[in-house]
Amino acid sequence: LNLEYRTAVGEAGDLSARVAVTGDDELAALARSFNHMADQLAAGVAERARQEQLRRELVAAVSHDLRTPLASLRAMVEALADGVVDDPATTARYYDTMRAQIAQLTELIEDLFSLSRLDAGAAALELQPTAPGQLIDDLLAGHSPAAAAKGVALASHVAPDSGLVLAAPLHVTRVLDNLMVNALRHTSTGGRITVAAAPADDGMVAIHVADDGEGIAADDLPHIFERFYRGEKSRSRASGGAGLGLTIARSIVEAHGGTIAVSSAPGAGTTV
Image (cartoon, rainbow, N blue to C red; front, side):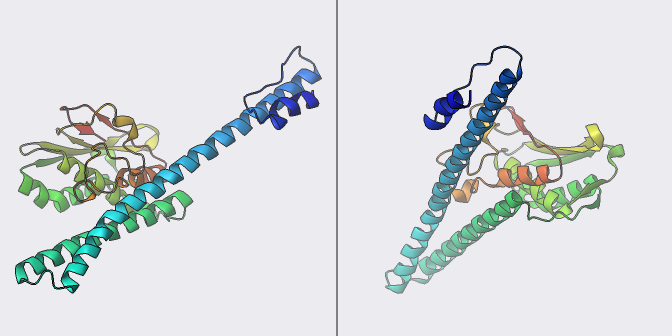
């Protein structure tokens, strides 16, 4: 049996090969153990391949998001240094653009740092009794100027029995901020965004951020929490971010022992 297994799996490198199991004696039990081990080896190899593919995609995405603003910064710096641009209005515009691109690069680097810490379990969550209603009030207050400027109404509904939860307020605020920014980006003038909180199962509290905006295409919906995923392939970082916000949000929620999910349909809005 051992020779048969080594020949089928080890030497041929075929992790799909299995030893035939007949009967219910000790040899059959041993064969089942070998097959279970082969299943684990195959799963391990598949997971390593998946992680390697994710690593390559991450490097490619980071390279793209770094290369574009850096090339632009270099061109503008050289234009200023060579005297190609000398009138005050254009010079001021160049400096404003450079500041904006440096801010984008800084945001990308901070997102990557946060994600690496969350992945490594090194992001300390200082849990404390937190009122979901207060987090939502602060969220709406912080985003009301942007919503008013766009003509989008903000509303909240917090169930009276939501009580207090153990949470890291700064981390949860980051999640809610990201969801609100996304909702505002994809909600047209005259639209509405509602943030609600209510008790859920197992002593948890569910927080919903719902908009009546453009919605998410069915093909994109399963992928929105993936790193660097952008549903609008032509969307620039300036208008759509690096594609890490929802990945970080998911990591923060899961670090709290919670889950995050989305429901959406084109033209019917989105609820997270």
